[in-house]
Image 1: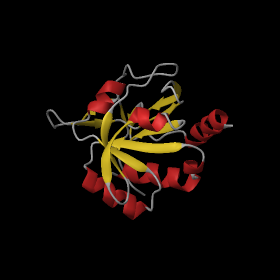
Image 2 (image 1 turned 90 degrees about the vertical axis):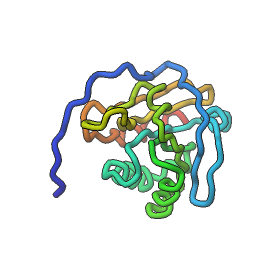
Image 3 (image 1 turned 120 degrees about the vertical axis):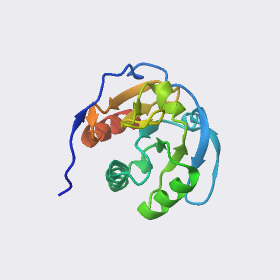
Image 4 (image 1 turned 30 degrees about the vertical axis):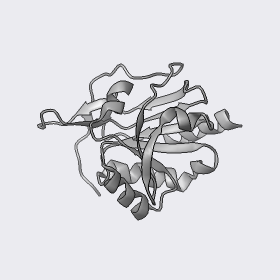
Length: 170
């Protein structure tokens, strides 16, 4: 059993249900290549589940992506991740996890800042990562469902997320 301390996170004024999600353009990485892509390009094609997670290699990333992979949401809508990891690290994660999901590379953490979910890392001045969060967006980028971690570590309520995804696409 992995031992770790659970730490409450400060309150945050994050993007909420009913808000229009901020658009952004970042490198979008799959198992073969990456290219600059905007979130609005993805939502133009249908609903998107936007998943923020800590850097690749951190244990929460492994748990989050294993769970999402096992639930196979990719046949219902576009699922895409965002973290501070580089495109090279993303390519490795996608290959190692056998993921069908693309990942936005946001090393400066600007997307998490725009969404109100940046988390300063203890003892590292000027270094932050996104706190775990999921945003279910419709074609207009309106947030239909939002979950943001309130403690570290914390994981999305996968059953709630799945129920909301199925309600949106049915």
